[in-house]
Every structure is written in structure tokens, then in C-alpha cells.
Length: 331
Image 1 (spheres, rainbow, N blue to C red):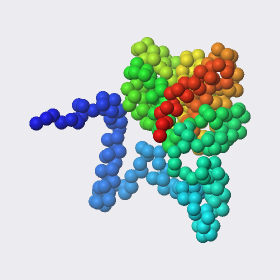
Image 2: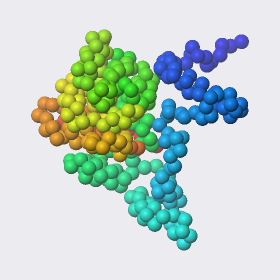
Image 3: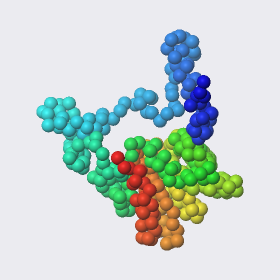
Image 4: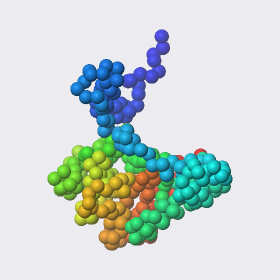
């Protein structure tokens, strides 16, 4: 008999490493078993409900979806509804107005077809205007890449940064498993740094430096620093002074700053306000020699920017994206 073509031993070793990394999935599986026992054998446990906190899914916690967004999506995906009289009684007037405005940004006023590989130009223009208004610094729509969720841009950046197992990424602990899993799946070295709970889950720069130097002493080429602000799962918001320390640290150590700012609207600390790393970096007014890269993840899209230091370096940076990213987007 011919040997089996697919066995555990013949799988991609990076996938097996990821399975080991996700060993805590056994807890989720055990929870599912208990859930089944609660449903089939009432009274078998001293509780009658399991609350799953391993996934960022607010609907599983009872939060209802935002009706406005779903109405707008429905109208955009089936624009013929906008021409029917009964639509006015089924959908809110705000959703109807927003859907018409969004459809005007699409060629042929329809969704579902292929678009520019960076995303529909009109949408990127609107996003760029919003960022410019928020930060007080110009945002170029050509630097924006729209994606179908947060995972694709993260994997994209890992593909760009990670060359072999000697490369590493500084990742905060605690953090979302998506980042640590992506590093492991790329076969790179995960370099953890620990958030300081006593300082509101801030980044202690001495610890960050210690972790970086320790990794480098072991031959790891640390390529980037991931910062999640506001924090996931901690919910913390970095103070501006800490952000400035981080920006300066990346400049000094030649690290790409990967800023996850997905939850910028989820602020639960009364005396804290969100400020983007782009705004912080551009307000610091570096000298011409202070060149480093910032990649910002926001909501369901990825923005790539370069600190506006000298035009030549910006052009070289954008040439990298023209030559590397866009060919991936062939439909």
C-alpha cells in the first residue's frame, strides 16, 4: 500500500508550530463540552451558563448589531431597493441617504465587482479626509489600503517584514492572539514585552529595551514593534508622553512601528483621549536623518504612512509598495 500523502508529520512545520502555540484552545474545547453537558444534563454543574471571553465577539455577550450599518449595507448591495416606494417605510431616512452617498463613490454605482487593489478610490478619498480632519496633518489617499477585515493586512505586513526564522517582532503581552499567531505562522521569532499593569498597562521603555537587546544577543533580527492602542484586551489608552517615547525608540532602534488603533472609538477611561501615532510622530518634527516607518491598522482598513521628513525617502518608500504590494492584487 502506498504511503498516505497527508499525515501530521508531512504538514507544514509552521502550521504545527502554530498548533502548539494555540495550545490554550483546549480550554475553549473543554468549555464547549461543559456547555453541551449543561444543555443535555441540567443540574450537572453548579452553574447554568458559560460566558466565552476568548473571542472578541460582542454579539456573543448579548450586544445587538448596529441596525444602521446593516440597513446601509443592504441598500448598497441591492440598490434597486432605493427606487421602490416601500423602502421609505422599511429603512430609516438616514440609512437611505447614506447609501445613496456611498453608491455615488462607486463606478457604475454598484458593489460586488472588482475594484482597485487598494480599494475603491472614492472611499479612500473620504477616509483620507477624515484622518486629515482628526489628526490635523494631511493624509494621502494613495497611502490607504482597504481590506476585508483586520487579519489580511496583518498577514500582508508579516509577509513583507519576515524573511526567515532569524527575524522577529516585538509583541505586547497581553495582546490579541491574531498577532502572535501570525508571527508564529510566518516562522519568525516572537519577542514578547510585558505591559505594566501598575502604570495603566503602559509600555515601560526599560523593559522594552531589555527585551530587544536580549533578542538581538540571541541573533534575532527584530524588524518591528507592535503597539495596540487602545489596548486589546486591556482597554488601556496610552498617554502622549509614552507614545512619544515609543516613537523615539523606534527611530533610534530602526524598527517599523506597527500601530493597531482599531478600537480608537472604544475609550472607557474618562481622563484619556485617543491620539494616533501618526499625529504624534508628525508633531515631533524629526530631523532629516531620523527616518523610520509607521504602519497603522484602523477599523477594517490598513493605512500606511511615512513620517514626512524628506521627499526622497517618501518616494523610495512608496516605490516599495508600488513594486511589492500592488502586483499581489491582480484579479
